[in-house]
Image 1 (cartoon, rainbow, N blue to C red):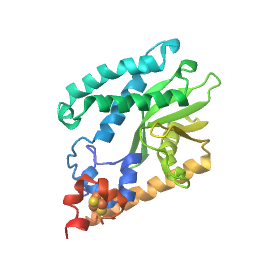
Image 2 (cartoon, rainbow, N blue to C red):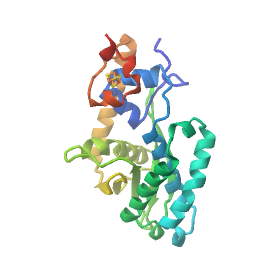
Image 3 (cartoon, rainbow, N blue to C red):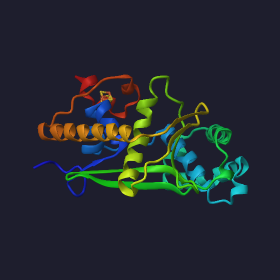
Length: 258
Ligand code: SF4
């Protein structure tokens, strides 16, 4: 019998778990099979803080969705984050520097979008699908806007820098999976996929096609089959790369300890 990968014994896939497996099966095993705990990372926590502020910004009236409002939200959202995860207080040694960096990322956001001019129809939208008999596919979309014309735009905020030329396709995989989930659920092909990189103030836009969604679906199916083979054989080859320098599991990984 296959080990449980989700509580209902189906393989639980998301764009990030698919990326984990394709980047390094051993990393996927640590995270998704063994579910080893990982300490909070500064980059991830800063991303959470900025995402929370951008999420809550759309609670305001359109005319109040300004950079000043976003910066005013920052201290209270940070306080709530520390209260939920007290270990963050120790991790962030210089709070002023930390909040300054988050403020700078938020200021960059307002050079890329004008949130007073549109409504965010959904924020943190959960999309899911019984992808195959034994595979459940899901993901959380940062923002999904439906224009009065019915056109759908899927938006994802990144607090890092934009990909180097030639790497945009890899970055777009996550949004194509969301577009596929939306298409399967609502029968509507999103008009635009938009990746907003606050780290360097760049935007990657893409108009998805059914062919691209089909390719994303093939990658998902192939990866699911590969994961089932790995589970059956308990075979999780490490795949050393530049990722190892940021991998929390490096000290226990066979690629670095044998
Ligand atoms: S250290 Fe490198 S090879 Fe090992 S699990 Fe992490 S990413 Fe994979």
